[in-house]
Amino acid sequence: MPGTLVLVFHRDLSTSRANAAFAAAARSLPDTNVVDMQARYPDARIEIATDAADEAAMLLQSDRIVLQFPIQWYSVPALLKAWQDAVLTRMYYIVAEAEGDRLVGTPVMIAVTAGNVAAAYERSGANHYTLDEILIPLKATAHRCGLPWHEPHVTFEADRLSPDALADAAIDYRNALAAFAAGTPVGTRNGKAA
Image (tube, rainbow, N blue to C red; front, side, top):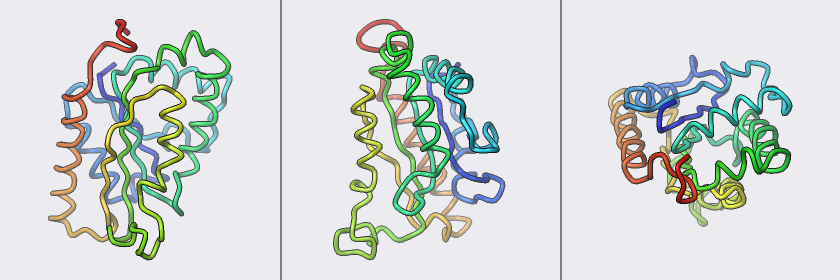
């Protein structure tokens, strides 16, 4: 399993411009595994007793985790929430010693696309809340799980980018992932070999 695990939570990557371009850019990096979670769970159901074990194994084999998704109504897509409920509950409450304790120390990065302009995500903007405030539940989850939080990668106006701007944004994303990989340790968690 490669060092960087990118889990893409988009309801249909075949209809996406930005998230599909970003997933393709991520796939071009060495030691990076990109997983289309909607393709993996087309009915958006993740069973805690069966599917969550497979997800936990995938997480434990990775040196860093990226959660890529579009912001939807100031929150995460439903499948990402279902994934959190099943996988993290299993790892941190049901089999904490065998899984959750072993995941502690794994860096996490959020990569989000937003349809609006950056100014809309200011206190004085149309959304009244900053993107940082909107991401607080994910920050809290990372903190609770002992996953070091990396600065999120954000792309605004994602569905309005021209082809050239989208190509540039995909390169920016690829560079952000490469910097994340270069700046985070490989093969260690909690100071011990993974």
